[in-house]
Structures are given as structure tokens and as C-alpha cells.
Image (cartoon, rainbow, N blue to C red; front, side, top):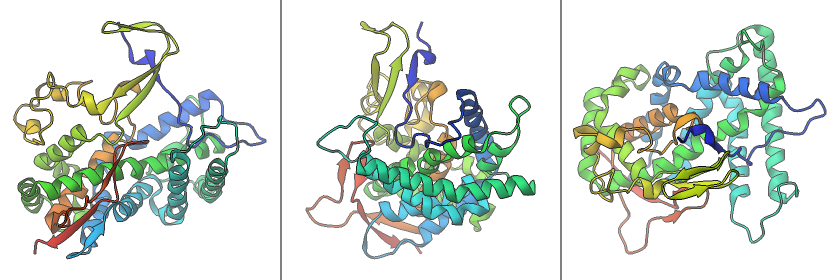
Length: 379
């Protein structure tokens, strides 16, 4: 029998712990930091803060220039970064947002394809730049951590959850808090931006679906975005179906990597212990045995009869099991509200002409690089 523990998720090399004279946090402290962070990212925690997520999504939609072709990923990324960083750090987000943007830039520089693949210990220019940005982010975050602890006002955000002492471990060491946050800070907006590009492209290509999303948002969302609740979000059934269908067709993280800890069988194949297993979500989501007419954009499949598409292990844009994306609930809320608010405000279309409006990138994720769309106000 195969278990999730048999296919461990490889640690991300993008933001490794900084080397310090005081020593790195222990594995036990890292596990505690992860558990504390998860408390702030679980579905119940996200539901309690839907209003501020909706407000950020509405601002993004309202600021979209109309009547001109716009490269959409940069402004969408900025809007989602504001939402994500505020979700993590609340009132301290304005201080940390510029450093988060530099962390994203460091990630982009680090993952660019290069002619040579250097060992992880070689201090390449990209790795040195990454380290400088990590240090800058940590130096900006450290006084915030100390101020919250000294004042006793820890906050109700993700950082506040990490600063709360646990009955088993007590308070987390400062370095354990700081080391775990650069990666999740970038993750709150980097992957959702890739997904948002595909969602907005589908709103442009399928105007009937976009009109239905707009009508649903107009009927069910409050006039004041800050008054949006989890009940409003749950009521956007068709909008959520559109987002899920786009994630099925174009999963932003289209290739998962796992390492087998023991020998096991996958179908007719023997996987030896220590082997790397690649799971291609792009092809898995287009398996006709699990999804009827798998290449067709059909959001209604999520409304009429979800069937096997709703079963664990079939729909995998956020992974599954103990190594699933910890920010899945936050990402779905961001994408659903951004989709609803954008369709509510404007019609989207692709610029006319024979030239492609984007390029598909597959390295480190499935993205619509250079995507340009045109918005026309619905009012």
C-alpha cells in the first residue's frame, strides 16, 4: 500500500536558512514553526479575513486601465502581493512589501534557465543576490517581531500565530520565526499570479462565462468589498467553478517532485528507494478516464456532477496529502474574488491582430508570459 509519507516533498532550494553564528533552528523547531504558520493559513483562518482579501481584489479591478492593451501580470502580481503580505503581516505589511518584491525578483533571477548547472554550494551572482535580499527582508522583519513580543500585542495574522507560545515547545526562537517566512511570503502571490493570468485569459476568450461570473458577482457580493464574508465567497459557485476549471486545464505548478523513501510499486513500475518521482498535473488533469471531454473548458462540470473530479488525488493543482500547498485556501479565495471583481467591472478581450498575446512558459511553472489584455468598462 502506498502512503503519502513514501513520497517526500523535496525542500525548496530557493530560500534556504541563512547561515548564522548562533546556529540554525533544530528540526523540531522547524516543525513547530511550520505548524504555527499553518494555523494562520487554514481554511477557517482565511474565512475570518475574507473582507480584506475582497477589498484588495476590488482595488485591483477598479484600477485596471480601460480602452488600452495592458500587460496584466505585473499589476496583478503587485495587487496579489499587497493582499498576501497584508494577510501575513497585517498593519506591518507596508513596511515589508518592498522587501517582498525584492525577494520575488531574487527568485526570478535564481530560477532563470542557465547554460551551466552549478552545485548548490557555489556562490553564483544569482545566489549572492538572493542572500542579500533574504538578509534585507529578515533585517526588516526582526524589529517587528521584537516589538510585537515586547508589547504583548502579537496580532491575529500569520506572524502573530507564529509568535504565540505552544504548550509543548513554548515560544519559538526568533531565528526559527524569521527563517520560515521568506519562502511563504513570495508564495502568497507568485503562484497565484501565474494562475490569475490563465483565469483572466479565459474570461477574455469565453465572454459568456465572463458574463455569468459578472452577473453572479453583481447579485451576490456586497457593494462594499470590505463587507464580504465567507458566506458571500461560498455563494459564488459558478465563479469558483471557472477558477477550478482553469486550474484543471492550466495548473500553475504543473510538475510535482517527490522522493520515494522505500521501494514501492506504481502500476507496473518498481520505484526504488531514493528515486525521484515526477507527477505531471497537466496530463493527469486531461485524463479522459477521470474528466469527460478533458480538453474542453467546461466550468459546469463542477456544478452539475463533480463526480471523480472532486475525489482526492484527481484534482491536484495544490498537490495532495501532507505535502499539499499550505496556502491553498488563501489562493482560492484570492483567485475567486479577483475573478468576480474583475468580471463585475469590465469586459476583457485579447488585442486584435495576428501576433500572439503571450508566450507559454513552463520552467518553474506554467505561465502566460507577456500576456496583454484589453478592458472595457461594463458600466
